[in-house]
Image (tube, rainbow, N blue to C red):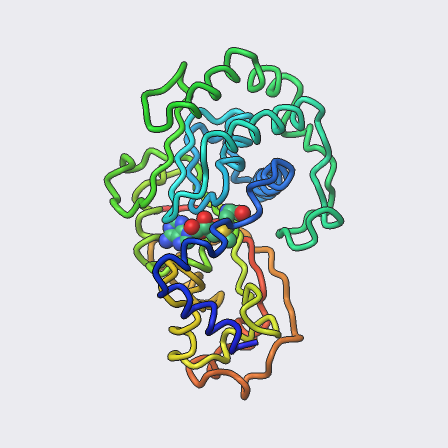
Length: 316
Ligand SMILES: C[S@@+](CC[C@H](N)C(=O)[O-])C[C@H]1O[C@@H](n2cnc3c(N)ncnc32)[C@H](O)[C@@H]1O
């Protein structure tokens, strides 16, 4: 397994060959996935008493389409900013996903569950359409035809000015903190992204700067090996040199940071964690089998395979 992964990493150094290796993330190329992921963030934020009808929503790492953010706009948000390091999304796919999302919301489709997306986290207690949040009155407004026309125009003209208050920005790469006004964002979310981010401390600090004082964050993080090893935590067994070879020249892979690093950096940046939903997995490699750098992980880190974190700025 490790040998295959090293070859894959080394191939990224071969000019031309890296161009034919797959350049998709999977996930957000499906409207049902986007719908399911967004409604999970929404339902859990409401449950944690954080849902404040965000007008300005920012997403880190949208991947193959802007679909999760489009679902946010169809739920009532006015501005959606997406930040990535690779430009995976394109207008044609975004427009197709938008059409499918409109149909899903119009039909008040139940949230696609674990049977359809076994790996999608977090799990919910109920997958019924959340009509207690997205009421008929709310949806009548958010799905109004002039709004949908504006969303379509904004998608066709990314980064241009707003259309009837609807604005979509897709910034790749995004590292300049000044691309967003300080204290202007109501909600920042990500789905399966923060395990890839190399500059984690700076990213959480940037989020703090962008978020309004009463804003909130919702992040789903997968600490697993992403098929780079046989056991779910097998990536913590690789030596640093092996890991470097596996990563190759790819713009990102996994940062290999456990749960406690995110918790510490979030708190250092000025956030308080309001709720966490963990999946615990004890089937991974034992502590003694890991790279010495990871042998000291706490029992909690060793067994936390995914987490959904809801956080807000710590009151001053
Ligand atoms: C596994 S994909 C997830 C995509 C999408 N969120 C989904 O749920 O399908 C990881 C995404 O994170 C992005 N990414 C990696 N490092 C990043 C960074 N430092 N800043 C923003 N996005 C990043 C990748 O380019 C990719 O789009």
